[in-house]
Amino acid sequence: MADYTKELEKYLLEAGCHFDRQGKGDHEIWFSPISKVKFVIDKHIKSRHTANAVLKQAGLPKQF
Image (cartoon, rainbow, N blue to C red; front, top):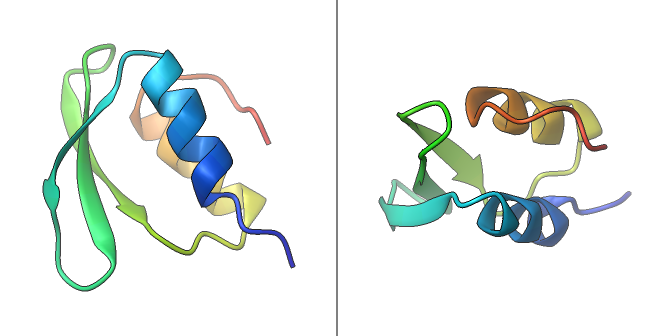
């Protein structure tokens, strides 16, 4: 099964999003200047649906 986390983080950084702080466990809190919201990223995203949901929260189009 694929791990989408690295590709997702690369895409978010290119879009101007940035790491805000460490969350609970293996989660990170990121901020999107596009949607002006903070969102959570799991460090082990195995589903393309979850990766696309994170992009939607960041105000970006589907990528996976």
